[in-house]
Image (cartoon, rainbow, N blue to C red; front, side):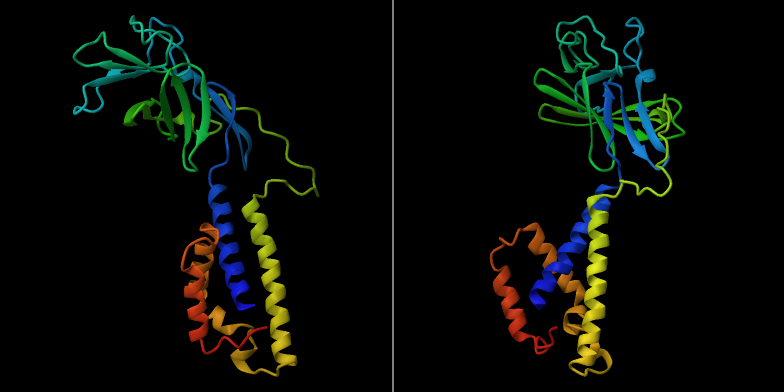
Length: 276
């Protein structure tokens, strides 16, 4: 009983934390290559970067060639949403282009106008691809950034990451969608995450367990004082239980030596006879 309770408590707490963490940034569903829509407490809102790009190719790209890292002999240019060409074969009808500092005719297209939207739980990303290369545009929401700022972040093999800091990265700021109607009075909103549901269920189960356990220890075993708390040895070492539950959940019970170490701990515990 004690071992099952250890896994239950630790596992449920870890799942709750995961669910709450994943709910920090709501998903943004792609509308088109330049926008996505997300549901917040204010309703349905859009992130739209279309106005940041130069539609007139004579004025493109919006962010011209710049050597962001002096240690690397490369320049980068970006035009949100709208394709452009720099006159070379490799950078024709692209939104992101890489050019050699020393040989301007040596270029590489890093992304076509077509895009996908994704996130890492903290920031939204616009993903562009061109042949074998992929570019990630990391959006930074800054309500005070009336003038957008484009920065090179890093590259890894054939993947490139840039940051675009702008007010348009904030939901509902640039060309927002109309808010959705609130749910009818009395209806239950269907915005609870899996983690929130698990937390509610776990809280109810733990409450039933605590009340039932205290009554059992008091009325059946005639316990007094702190002894009325069921499995008191487990609750006094809660942090160890949480650690064991996390290890069990994330390793799927396959970590070698885990069961053996637990068995030794139980055998050495003089209070393990206090079970419900």
